Image (tube, rainbow, N blue to C red):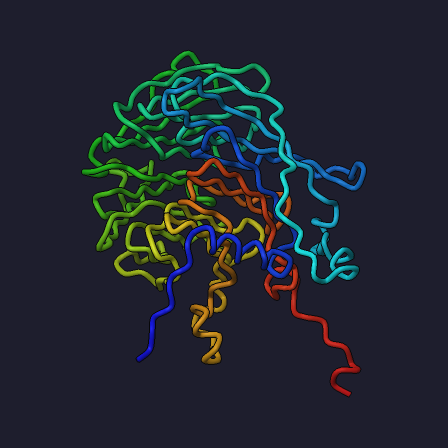
Length: 401
């Protein structure tokens, strides 16, 4: 009689992941925060000449203290080895000297600026046209505008409940979307005019339940998408009176959506059924494809700004998954099929609790920051040995002669 293998505990899974770090990553940093951060985003820090073998990048994080202490909007700095720019392995030389060594994830993060914040920060995002301007939203749905150099600038009140949806337009300076558990969506102009504390447009009928995410299209300044607990994904056009131009329904609530940085018609959405769905804006009735790999709700989605067809998702299953859409339908060996669908690049299994948020660095391809419920912030870059990361493996003529 066959006995079922006992599932690994969270700590056992983490130890297994840590033992595989040298094989799967070029870099990993792990920092235990005082309080959990529900949000993380890379700032567009110019990549300068290395100092002492390191380059600096900067991050936005927040705090969620559950009312036990003051909350803060924080700006952090991390030192990265210069080799990370060249798809080279910073650990390679050390491993050649001692192949049995397993470098533990280390912390290179320090807080450089922080500002007091009213209640917890559920999301924080910088303005692409002026990264000194940062918007936040809290558990009451109040939106705050901060200057990185001067602190709080304005408080924007419209929503009546918690909010997670927050998105600056990549094409129109100062145009900000927010969405809330009160089912509403608001459009703000935060360029500093006298009316900037009032929304320039609001929607109370786009959704009949919690609005979980809102994102701007990356090519059309008038289009944005919203997803909700009402099972609906909607594409909205500011030029149209009733705004909604496309709708699709899932069997369970949607949590997140993302538009491609390379294709004007491609978007992804995901939610509590654990699948990642791909859609074509020209026909939203049915998904183009769905990808299976998560074991619990998908919480966030993002397309790579560097590599066409690469999508990253995070979930309540403590995982982040990288997908390569170009591999959909590719042939697999039986052994490969056991590891997952062909479009699955890798699974980041370094978190011990649900992933709250993540972000792909816009300056350094494949560099990711991710934050989880249990106060941990990780910065990591998957191995250059993956063909999609470092290119096809180099073949020595001696091997085939």
